[in-house]
Image 1 (cartoon, rainbow, N blue to C red):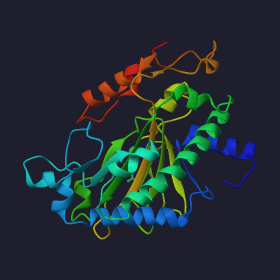
Image 2 (cartoon, rainbow, N blue to C red; image 1 turned 60 degrees about the horizontal axis):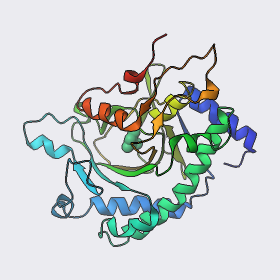
Image 3 (cartoon, helix red, strand yellow; image 1 turned 90 degrees about the vertical axis):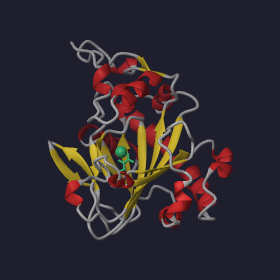
Image 4 (cartoon, helix red, strand yellow; image 1 turned 30 degrees about the horizontal axis):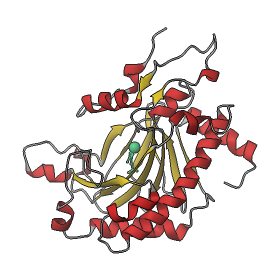
Length: 299
Ligand SMILES: O=C(O)CCC(=O)C(=O)O
Ligand SMILES: [Fe+2]
C-alpha cells in the first residue's frame, strides 16, 4: 500500500463497488510471518487424524473447533464440501495463547503474532474503506461497535479424486464485515463472481486478499458489495487459506449509515440486531443462503 492516501482510497472504493474483492501488497505484515502462518496450518492439518479428531465438533459455540466435511463421504450424507477447517477467535490477543492448539508446538506463538499484525491492518483497511465512502475514517469501526467478533478460519483442501463432484467451500458471501485472507502459493482455488462469471483470485506473491462481508454492504447502503465466492478443489495439490473475519458482536444494531441516505438514496435495509442476522444465517443452514436479502426494504 505505497500509493498516496487519496489514490489508495479511490482505488479501494472502486474495487469495493465493482468487485467486493481486492488484493493488497506492501501491507506491512512480514512475508516470513505469513509463510510461517501457512506452514503452521499445514503442520496442523498434517497431525495424525486422531489428534485433530479430539477437536471435531459441529457446535459453533465452542471457541476452538475443527470441522471435517469430507469425512461425511463415509456416511450416507452427500459430500457437499471437500475441506477441513480449524476455527478460533483471534482477539483479545493476550487471552488467546492458552486457547490455541498446543500442537504443532509453534502454532500458538505464530498465530498470536499474526493476529496482532492483522489487527492493525484491519483497522487501517476499515479507515480507508470509510474514507472511500466519503465519510469520517472511523465511521465503520464505530458503527461495528466495541468488542467486535474476530474469528480465524483456516481452510484445508486436500487433493480431491473427483473435483467436479464437489466444492471445497460452496458459494457464499461472508456474513461479517471484513475478511483478510491469506492463501497458499502455487495453486488456485478461490473464485469470485463478476457479471455472472467465476473469476479466479490468483495467489499473488506476498499479497493478502481483502473481501467485504454483508455488514459493510448494509452499512454502505448497498454501495459497496459483499460478493459471492467459493473454493474449488483439484486432483493433485492440497491448498490452504486462512481467513481473518471482523464482525460486530451480536448486540450491535446495524443499519445503513445515516449520511449515505437522502431522497435519491433511500435506505435499502431495515435496522436489525446482528444477533438477528446470525439467527437468520443459521436458519438457512444447508441452503444457498440469502441472508441480507431478508433484511431488504422494498421501495
Ligand atoms: O479458500 C478460500 O480461498 C476461500 C475461503 C472463504 O471464502 C472463507 O473462509 O470464507
Ligand atoms: Fe468466504
